[in-house]
Image 1 (cartoon, chains in turn red, purple):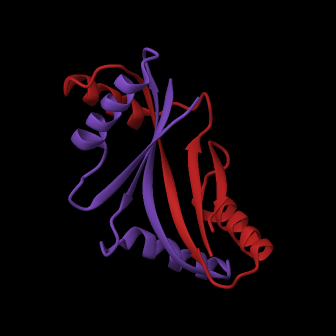
Image 2 (cartoon, rainbow over the protein chains, first blue to last red):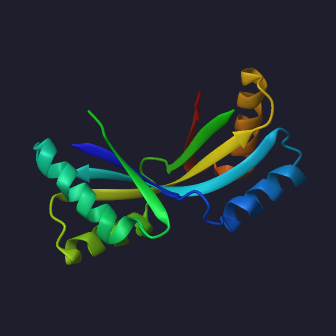
Image 3 (cartoon, chains in turn brown, green):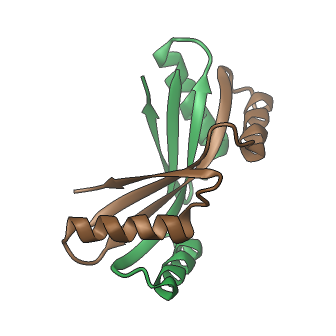
Amino acid sequence: MKARVTVTLKTGILDPQGKAIEGALKSLGVDGVASVRQGKVFDIELAGADKTKAEAALKEAADKLLANTVIENYAIEMKA
Amino acid sequence: MKARVTVTLKTGILDPQGKAIEGALKSLGVDGVASVRQGKVFDIELAGADKTKAEAALKEAADKLLANTVIENYAIEMKA
């Protein structure tokens, strides 16, 4: 079973990396970009076919390691 | 207009960061994770309402800056 966990900064948390990308795009001449925020994505393959178990494992992984829940949100998306 | 650009490593490209996460999850006692691959996600806000123009700008941004197309794939997803 495959899943994708997307970790993004919470609204209001400063994102200097995104700001730097914004500036770089401007100096590269890419027009029309108003703002950029960077996040992380984890493509995870899970052993076993139990969806409920898999979702619980992913939630645990995100809470314990993948996301810093003080400043980040995460979204879990199961794939076929 | 909002969009999300997801950048992931191509198949076959070694992902030591993903491997490290895999190991860390195992030692944290999170079971059932077979493999992890890490990527990047960019949440981009675009000026203007022209979808075609926005998509062209995003493609340019991804090719020029966001992804290293030698080893990475990218996917552009427009949001409402």
